[in-house]
Length: 130
Image 1: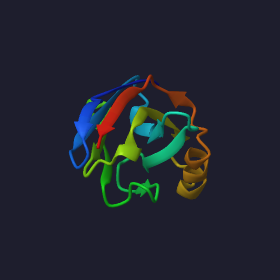
Image 2 (image 1 turned 120 degrees about the vertical axis):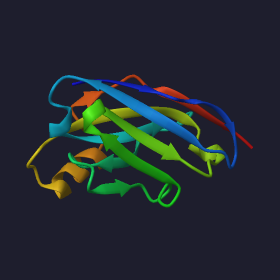
Image 3 (image 1 turned 90 degrees about the vertical axis):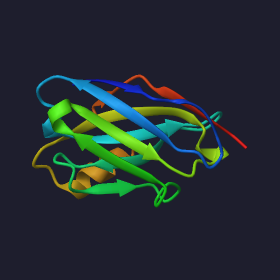
């Protein structure tokens, strides 16, 4: 699976932004997808993950209630809707995939939270001005 994130940009605090992740390959629907970010001077961190069919989602506490992860397997795409953006949301955002269909979701989530999915795309920069 090859992934490419897009949709980043410069916004003001309180604004919204929608990131997209385009995937190639016929196995997209058989992997879980996650979003990660790396702020200036910070380590890459988990943001959100969605299960193979999109029915189960999980979020980092810092974005819960503001961000929504989704996917459309018919379009080989995943999305991250980001609302009420804050300056601390600034960073390079990456989409990633891994965890084959049929795996335990809890083990998948653990894998994602440790930033260990198998496939990574290039990131897209999100800048939030105060």
